[in-house]
Image 1 (tube, one colour):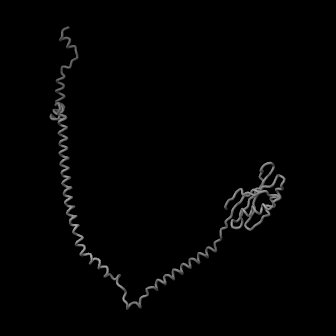
Image 2: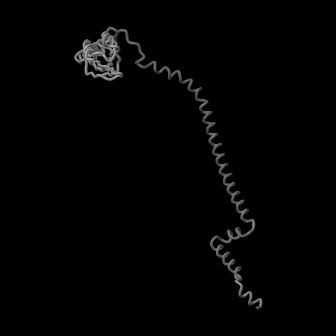
Image 3: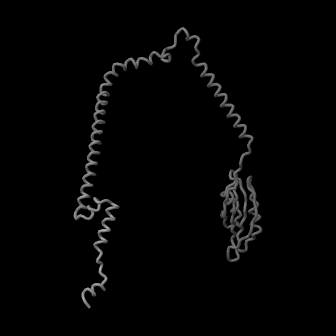
Amino acid sequence: MTAVQYLSQEKIWFEKTQYDEAERRFYEGVNGPALQAQSTAPGTGDHGELVTRMKDLELENQSLHKVVKDLRSALSKLEARVAVLEKVPASAATVAPCAKAAPVQQPKERAPVEEDDDDLDLFGSDEEEDAEAERIREQRVKEYTERKAKKPAIIAKSSILLDVKPWDDETDMAKLEECVRSVQADGLVWGTSKLVPVGYGIKKLQIQCVVEDDKVGTDMLEEEITKFEDYVQSVDVAAFNKI
């Protein structure tokens, strides 16, 4: 096999340069020859970036110059305004006495004329108003007192549950309850009762009552019930509730 025949069988891209040229022309047509030349030339990318940054700096410098110029103009105007304001107090001082004298000429500042003193009653109206206010106040207090007297008073009451303990299991519990209920007082009403086992055959009397707080207290109940020494060992308050 000759060299020509061997090369003809190899897949070699002989037309690569043609394709490269066609690709270059295509991108030149899309982006322009300047951009293509800049992108293909070695080192031109960095140079273009440097040029762009220099242009940006020039624009920024121009903007800063404009800002400084505006600030100087504003500062000059401010200095001129301050100079004018510094001159104002001197001129205002000469006008101030006239301005202060004006309120003295108002009618409210004038003293009453002596010849009209006999016709003026400076205190009569105040006394009449005070008397009227006092009368209204007394009338309201009277009405409030009458309403309060007609309103029924609320009586504070409490529900008390007592534990009455006997001496032993031989104590007559019926007699013990009879003794407890024999305690009578104004504002005291006895309620239901029951026997509650304590232990060893001993039972305690648990009895309820309703009392008026202003008339009957727990101390009074314990004192009266413990007087029955033959039946009662002790009295305890098991529950206390306001009604």
